Length: 320
Image 1 (cartoon, rainbow, N blue to C red):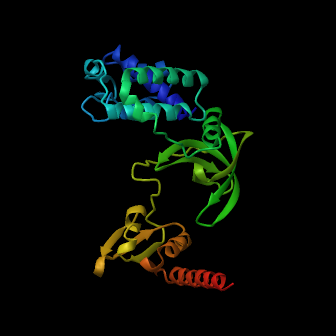
Image 2: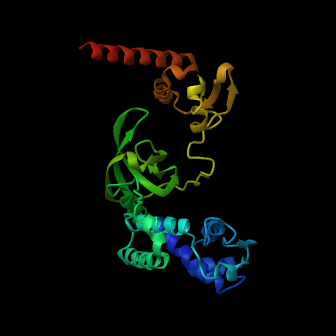
Image 3: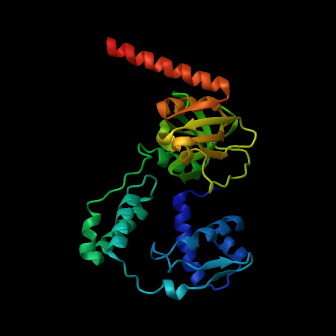
């Protein structure tokens, strides 16, 4: 059963204590103790070296494994009394208050977090003052995150009404959620029963959501490595060429592309691939005079026609 993000965080906190008391623990023994697979344990161990008592580094958890045993090389360094700078205390307090409002958090965990936050505020003294003037709001409002997280935990199917900006329409779908991922925004990766394929849905585009009684039963799929980004075009996807001026160079930063050649006067000729070239028509309209689609020809003609229609509609509205 796939763990949700909150359960995984709880497990990893327990894992730190467990490993401190058991130097050189065997991978198989630790996995059995926590009721997870060895692959899941190795995944946790890949994250732990990114954690520590300061975001400045130098006191991160030095934990590694040779595949058979797990070694923690600096437990005494990390166990030294924690001294937070003012900016660290502010960041920690803001994050703690934000997490305490997160949908899906168990009430006992929420109360424990609030108690810890109160102690930290007392210890931080004047440094805590700045944190009280800052706040973080999670984009997954309306309980969407909580419902997805619950559906994953209980292995239940979801019904959603989802907005697709590429088609500018709402669609109704039943999905079997696989996992929550965060790549700039928060997404649910799921098996879509409408398309009979794996799809990724951005949570802030879910207009309505319901947890169904039907069990979630996604096919066995290999989880994608998202370290290179959420959108990873395939080599067989159609090629699109876009030329932009200096004001459109941001396209190369936001869209995965095969190449970006410099043009005179600061422009770029960008070659990219997409399974749905028509979705780039909206990009062409957004660019306006800062760029245009060069090929394929039918897409370029379609984008120009859409631009003329939009301009005509605007001029008609001005005259009325």
